[in-house]
Image 1 (cartoon, rainbow, N blue to C red):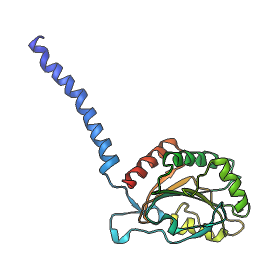
Image 2 (cartoon, helix red, strand yellow):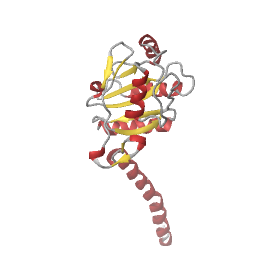
Image 3 (spheres, rainbow, N blue to C red):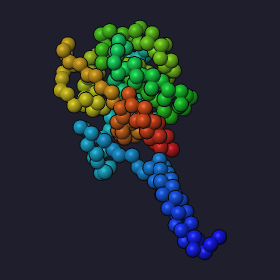
Length: 213
């Protein structure tokens, strides 16, 4: 090889290899070492452990007629979302995406999924049982919850913060959110994801794996 070409070849080699290595390092860091944020009310971030928001207790009947509560998520990484079985817009996208997520973590006892109905008057236990069969919900890893509308909406607004709208859970109140919430084993909110967006759901999957490690 002509000696004059060696510097050019080395430059091209570094120009190609260095960005690839840098990208690989950043990807590895983001998916292994970089800590997920801690969220509070109105999606505010905090780095002070004393200010970490912790999801409080709840108790709602699920599709099997038993009750799901905070104890069922104790020591587990879990995701939560709001839906209703008669939804014709975003839920037919979100719920199948969650079904795919469930399959990925099938039989993993450290992971749980809870979907809360925003239309409990129509989403009875019997209706949710039917809907769960259509989705392929696998108990006890994934449960669909119903119950008192005011309590369900209060939990959405004051604990999961899936909506910024005000309301009292009355007849004219309605929540329709695409957000999927990620909660860690200590009950801290660690992420919000658009359940209709495939890239955000992929990121959710990566973040779940990170918390499980």
